[in-house]
Length: 322
Image (cartoon, rainbow, N blue to C red; front, side, top):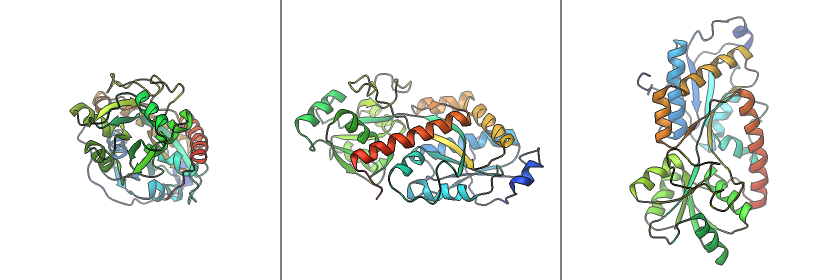
């Protein structure tokens, strides 16, 4: 695969859905992929890898347009309002399925206003400890939390983020009470734990794993149903005494609602083909992520299931958007 496309620009002329239906040669001009996160994030990396593959397949530029902020809501709104012609797509993180569970008044309907294209990747969150903390397993964490309710702290990327919800689910399933210390992003949270300011941190495997490998953090457990190929020595939450626990954040592709079926099938097929390229698989495996490349129907089912799950967890833990 060629060098990743790093240039970004905004805007592309739009055509109506009816015009597209009369144009079986899609695409005939540049495609824009909106990414509601900053350059360098795992979602951005995923989008750029897929964009390069689509560019090579379609022989037209596929431009990544980063629109970070507001938990991905602003970028998602742009896509919800775009013409359903295949020239505006979105790659977004699983915060998409958490936002409607938090009581936020969203400027779109997460189900009605989008066409799920494909769940592209999934990757576990990872709980890690400061090397100075006397915590070597998830059972150590649970035991200490039960002995001293509300005193054992953990750092996360912020209130109502995916990492915060990960630990809320743990508390919901075990009945423990942990002290949440929110930071403004996963990087500051990990820095605080590496510096001994908090004994625990929860983050994506992509962000935490390099620090575990370097010895700056101690890996405790991962949230996926099975161990990660990128970290085979770190057990899952379920293995560690919380049976049934499973949470794998994802990156997925969407389009506006009412995308023509022929266009949906074409984009889905080329995205899946791109993900199976050996060099792409190697990059994701290095970062502890798994390639999915689901059908639109499978992805739609995941979204509906997750919205229901996080609504229940948020209500039980009284978690609301800030």
